[in-house]
Length: 148
Image 1: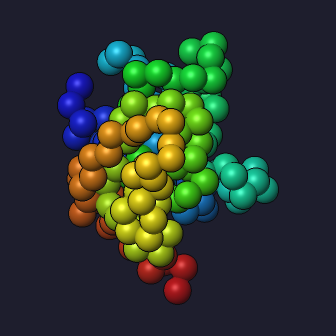
Image 2 (image 1 turned 60 degrees about the vertical axis):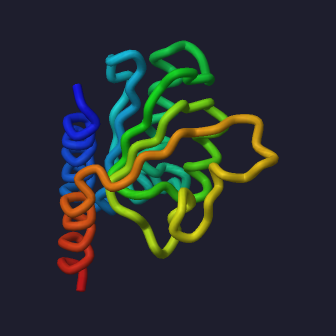
């Protein structure tokens, strides 16, 4: 599958999160062409501030892999990860991050911070941005417009 196809799956997770009343962010973890995990935001339903789509997916992927290190894996997420999620990706040794739209209010890959670029880190995550960016931004915009 292509990055675009995986991002469409992440968008489906974001849509499911929106339907559950969560901020619509979706994530997919892929290793060697196999989807290890998929998730949407669950912060509200789980009463857990760490239950972002990325961390939920990383936890499930680690369980599926039987290892907290997800070497060689790729994480697809609909919006730029926050600092917490970026840190989790580094700890999991994710090889590649692919995200949809930038997050100017908290993005930690490039918008507010460049966590992955810090020279002291012992792991590098390759970052690709802008995959289905308009669709990823659109689902967030629709969600927040409906709340106003």
